[in-house]
Length: 158
Image 1 (cartoon, rainbow, N blue to C red):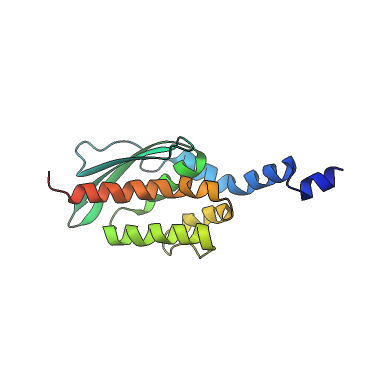
Image 2: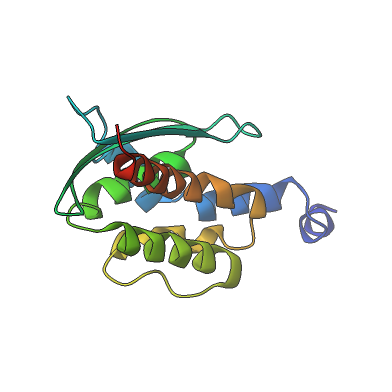
C-alpha cells in the first residue's frame, strides 16, 4: 500500500522533493547571508515582495562608474530566497546592470528550461533541483528582481 501511495504522489514524494530542493548547499548559502545588512547612503533601493508566499527582499546598491560598488540586502523569506540573495551578495560587486540582467535571465532559464546555471556564479548550481517546482521559481528570482529594481532606481535622477 505504501509503495502505491508514493508512486501516486503521496506524502513520501513531498518529503523527497523537499529534501532535493532544500539541500545542504541551499541551507549553507541562506545561513551565510552574504551581503545582509544596509548601506549608509545607497544610490538605489528597491523593495520587492511575493504576496503569494510572503517573501520580501529589500536591496540597496551603490554604484561607481556604472558598476556595483557595494550592495546590501534584507530578506524576509524562505531558504531559497535567502540563499539566492546570498549568492548575489557574493558575486554582484563589480557587475554592471547588463551583467545582472543576463544573470537574472540565466537563472530563469535554468529554472524553467533546465539551462545550465550562468557562468561565473557557481553557487547557482545549488538551485538546479528547483526545476519542475514552479511555485518555487519566484522565491529564487525575487532577489534578482529586487537588485534590478535597485539598479534602475540608482539610475534615476534624485
